[in-house]
Length: 201
Image (cartoon, rainbow, N blue to C red; front, side, top):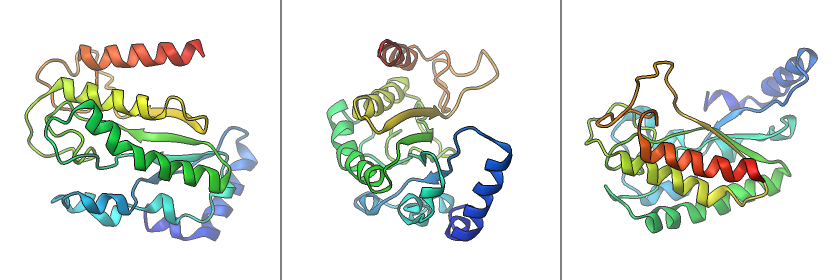
């Protein structure tokens, strides 16, 4: 879809057709990516190469949408076990960039997809789903916390669609390396804490 979204007239027409039958909020899940990623090592997985980055910066038909949708799998660190401060520092310029996009289009932003595996190095290539890695559920929790801390007070940010939650209630757990936070208490505690803050506001 990254290359297809360059066909502006087609998408504007499609959004118009959708609005004939649907009265709800319309968005599009644009891919993350800016020149910021160039400071990090390239990903060996060709499906997640740097050519996937930058779609959000190149779509010129965002005015047709109600809200800016962003799949936010930004590369954050080179560290296997970064500190919370490392993660927050990595998010700072990204937050500024996304804020600029929001202000340019005068629209709020929602993360249509974001997630982290429960592995060491989860923040290096967050979208890299098929590499072998050592399980680390506390790194997943730290990545979740850094997202909330970075965005929860941004007035232009509307929230998150997390990837992923399995229909299997036994999914996840200690030793699991997948994206789900299920049965991983550190991450579940983070979710409960921050969503309770959001619901109170």
